[in-house]
Length: 163
Image 1: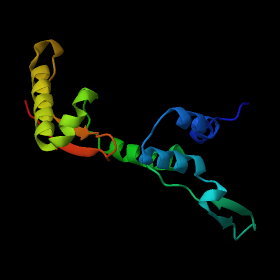
Image 2 (image 1 turned 90 degrees about the vertical axis):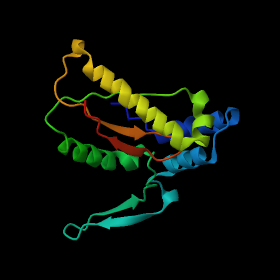
Image 3 (image 1 turned 180 degrees about the vertical axis):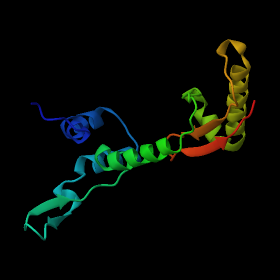
Image 4 (image 1 turned 45 degrees about the vertical axis):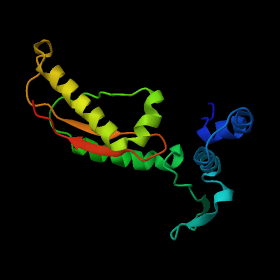
């Protein structure tokens, strides 16, 4: 059976070559370094010992980077389980509203007004959709918005829009 290839393996094998031909930000360098060194001797470690059977094992420290697949698997699973427990007994739809990347400089210089316009448009679009008889939707429409900004943590914006 083949051994699974991890993201750290890809970075180790091809990262240097990629960086020779591409520019990336300091933040991205840091993430690559964290993932590459996660749970290796370079991150330091500790010894795990069993009091009952005297088993001893070296355990290397994790990078704890939110982008690291090794570190965030359990955090992600816990988050998903917590969110699943909060679900209401009704249908859900995942919709993504995006803006062209060309608008990023304008948006980042005028965040408050641009985000208000964006969420007002999303609100109006969903209301129009919900009122369309062809979809035969019953109940009340509501939405939770998650604003993803490049290089920043997601901003949760909760709107309840009742039609």
